[in-house]
Image (cartoon, rainbow, N blue to C red; front, side, top):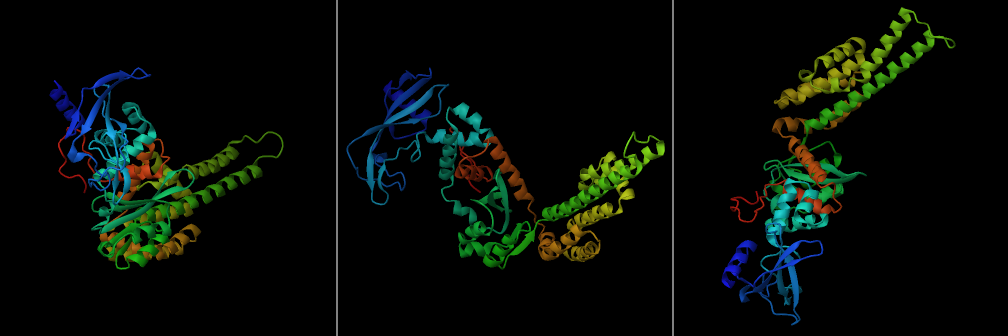
Length: 453
C-alpha cells in the first residue's frame, strides 16, 4: 500500500527520486479540504544549489519544514511538506537547498506556476485568481517564474535580427509609455523597456553586441527624430523606413485642422447672417425666403461638422449617405474638398510598389501642397520633404509598422484583461510571454516540438 501511494503521488505531482509518506487530510477555517503529503529527498537531489545546480555542503543543522502548494485534485488543495535545509554555495553563498518540484523562491510547484501562466494568457487575471485561489500579485510572480524557466536568456532574441520595428505605446493614464522592439521576420517582441525617447532606445542599442548590430538591415518606425538619430549613430549602414500609416495619419491631422477652420468659418457666417436678417427685438421674421437662407447656411455648417468619417474613409468604403455628404462638400466648399483630394492623392502614392514612380509623384504632390494656400498642408509638405527618403525606403522594401501596431493592440488587450498592472516588470514578462512563439508545456501533455522561436 505504501509503495502504491508513493507511486501515485509521484505521478500526480510529476516528481521523481522522492519518497512520499502516507497523505493526510485536514480542513481549514474556510471549510476547504487540504491533502498534505510528506516528502523526503533522495541523496542525489538533496543539498543542491537552486541557482547553479551544484551539490553543496550544509550550512547549519537546524531544519525547518516548508510547504508547497500543488495543483488541486478534484477541488481538494494539494500541499507538499518537506524539511528545508540551508547550504553554503561557494559562488552564491548561503541559500536554501532546491527541491525538484518547485522553482527557486516559489511556494508553488512548477506545474502550478506553468498552469497559472498558461491561464493568464487565455483568460482575465481576475478569473485566474478565482479559479486557482490566489491573489493578483501571485499571478504575476507565477508568470515571471514560468517565463524565466522556459526562456532563461532573453538576449537570445536579439541574435540574428535583420528587420526590426520600433514604436512606443501607452500602458497607463498620465503619459506612461513603454518602448517596444519587434522582429518583423518572426513577428515577436524582442525587447521592451519602460519609458520612451532617445535615452531609452540607446539602452537597446548599447545592449547589442557588434555582431548583433551588424546583422540589422532595416529599421521601421514613425517619424520620431530620436529613432532616426539612434539609427544613424549605432547602425549607420542599415536602412531607415518610415511607416506609411503614420504619413497618412499626418495628412488626416492636417485635413482635420482644415475641417475645424471651415466649420468655425461656417458657424461665424451663420451667426452674422442671423444678426443681419433677424431683428434685434421682437419676434424673428418668418417669411420663407429668410428661413431658407438660414437653413441653407446651417446645413452647410452641419455638413462640415459631421464630415470627419466621410473624409477619413477610403472612397471605396463610403456609405451612400457619406458619398452624398462628400458631394455636398465638393459643391459648397472648394478649399475643404481640395484638402481632402490632396489627402487621397497622398494615400494612393503610398500604395505604389515602384519607388522611382513614387518619388516623381511625391515631388508633384509636395509642389501642389506647398502652393495650395492651405497652411496645414504647407507644413505637411515640409515634413514629408524631411522624411521623403524614409518613405521611399518603405515602398522599396515593402515593410511597414503594421505588425508592431498589431502588437500594440495585443498589449492593450493584455492590460485590459489584467485590469491594469501595478508592477511594470510583471507586465513586461506577460508581454514577452504572449507576444512571442513561446509554448507553455502543461502537465501530462505532449512536449512541444518548438518551445521558443
